[in-house]
Image (cartoon, rainbow, N blue to C red; front, top):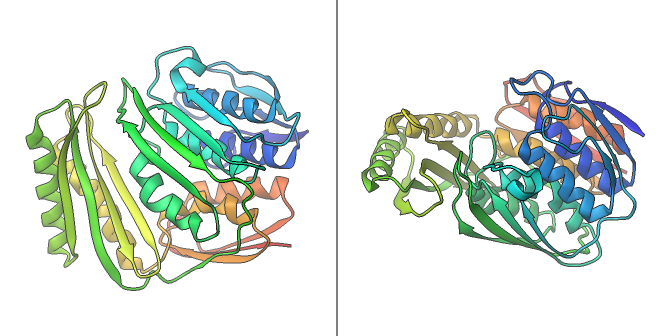
Length: 349
């Protein structure tokens, strides 16, 4: 059994997600201790528990420590990942109301299903647009198109928006099995083609979405960037707001977002997302900081040599690399310092 210290490095939910996916893919049992030990509320949160229980269904795993707040778990797969038609609701799995991110649940389980022996359909319920997780639109417009260049195929549809704290969102994903991915080289972004996005207000006055749109458009145009943002009022189980920006280049796509919060001015929501986009754009790298750590696992499972350049090396990236090396015979070289641009090489024999 592989022993993992859940407090090491990034020390959050990413350790759990990556370890579970690798355990499912390799058949190696894993024990994780000190789960989120340095967080204000240590242990498994609802969305981490949902990912654990969902993956357990897919590989018929024996599991201990499956409860909210648990700081230790063991996971013993009993079979390879099984394709199928799955429905996972974060609130039901955690046995408590939760807007836990279903996008993180998706990122936990999709890769084992993509490498399984048949097509799978996922029906996921929970938070689709919540802090500290990729919003649904990032998965749809940035993550999946990038891994599609490796040969992975998945189609998604947003059925309901879900914001913190109410949740109630839903999306579906159809994942093609029998995947045989190929290496990826993604170092230069090329010329910027366009920036587009959504500014949304859910169960809130429409002028909030318009104010976010106006502010973001003005900030990006002042930087000389082409931008087209659509204000949109959407329905959801509870109130929420945010902006989701997609930058399309000749060779790459990047995404940036900010979720609104009670008492947070619309201008601040717009400024935060624009600031990240501008910082990334000025570096000329092909991979945004969020995508870098998310690409590492599919690339580590792909025979051959892959490389990409990111606009910022993050603790998430460094932690993921160290964890992947525990499970796979793969060389991962990260050239650069945390917080700075850098290049990543992955070699799988």
